[in-house]
Image 1 (cartoon, helix red, strand yellow):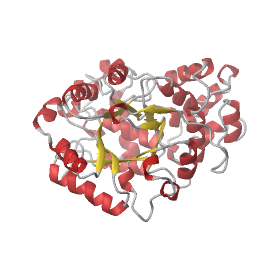
Image 2: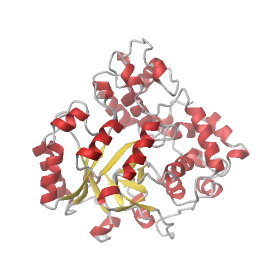
Image 3: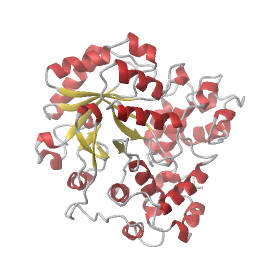
Image 4: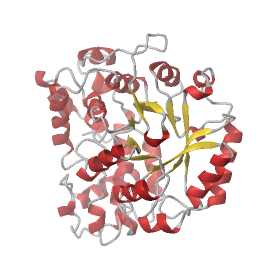
Length: 403
């Protein structure tokens, strides 16, 4: 496999024998040629207790600007990390729509440090949102989302600063709904994402959740999605395309994909359809770096249901990922005597190899207090890895890539 994956894109996957558009046609996906073409209908689902009906594919403020008009036309109406926009770069395609027709999400981070070392501070969070609203001039944010989430259930019980900041802003009409993007924190002796989300569902006013979820993920994640549906909690999957980007640049994998039994699908399209096939999952936010990725993702999101060839491709991808691609389950982290945030490190590798964003991966990796060089090679973590990854060797490899 080439180490230069950041120079390539899923365009290669779409080219299996011709062009990206030809591959979309081959995979029985609607061809979304440009913003002037008639838009296929993007499914909408109820975002839990918020009551919002949101398009199944979530948009994001870091999408290339030329994709936004196409996405709006296709029915994307929920925008992740909208606080990154300012009044001078707010998409015209949204400005032209009635404000109530689309939903803007503001993510709120800890202060005075990163997501593991930073603090929850009611006043600073309150002022942050007010400041972003002044910069964007959008009037209000539909969703106030706690980015990265709580470290533990104990922290939820002890610190209500984030909730209080939300409640103050809601009272002033500046935000409407409360959500959380929850990570695992067993690397700092905290709790797993689903443990925290289960507690929040019954004890705090969070209306929606966002979390890691990809094909082959832990059963606990699927169980949370099912419980959330019953409790009317919205669910958005993130970090969904495990292994898709690196497979797209691997000549051996692409050769295997040419077998007739896989024709009519691609790993990216199959993954999107697999996610969408889960009726209890509200939506997915999928890294989208270019027009080909958008066409593939949107085409799959509005196409026919997951079929036998899609399942065959997902099986091929699962075999490819074995021993290679971390699914971010964080089981190994609990066994690490050095308390290395292994799942975070491999998440940064995914930014580089699957999302094709090497610069971001290096920035995130640089901020770690204990990186891949902290591994002593004891092997205690190996038995915990469902992907059978040689974790010590993988940490060295990632350090060479990002260090």
